[in-house]
Image 1 (cartoon, rainbow, N blue to C red):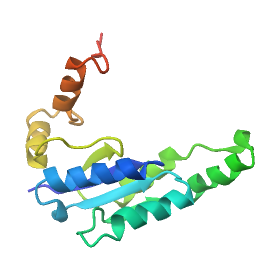
Image 2: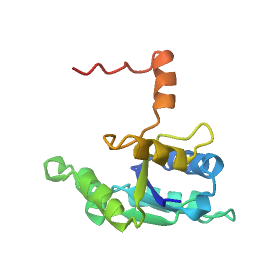
Image 3: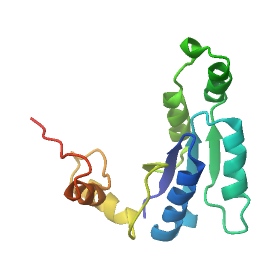
Length: 160
C-alpha cells in the first residue's frame, strides 16, 4: 500500500481549520496512519495560540502531526499594524514548499483549510486512478466540484 502525507494549507481561519481537520479524521480511513501537516502562512500569533488551544490541546487524538508556521509570514502583521503595507512580502509559496519538503511519503493529499471531506474517502482508490492513467498528474475532489456546479456555485471551465 502506498503512503500518503496530508498537507493542509492554512491562513487566519482556525475555526475552518478545525472543521477541515475533523472531516479528515471522520472520513479518511485509518487517518492515524498518515502524517497530517498544517502549513500556516503567517497567521497572527494570537490566532496561532487560539489554534493550539482549540485543536491541539484537546483530549481527543491529535488532529494533526505537525504544525509549520512561517516566521517571515508572521512578520506581515507587525508591518500591517504599522501601516507599512508596501513592505509586506507574500510568503505563501515558502510556507507550502516547506510543508512539501518535510513530507516523507510517496504521495501528497493537499487540502485548504476552507475545504472539508463530506463523504468517506479512500486514498488508495485515488492512487489506483493515477496508476491507471500515467498522463494524469493529480486527482482532486471532482465529485464535490460537480455537486457545487449543479447548485450554481462556480462555473465549469471550458478548455481549448
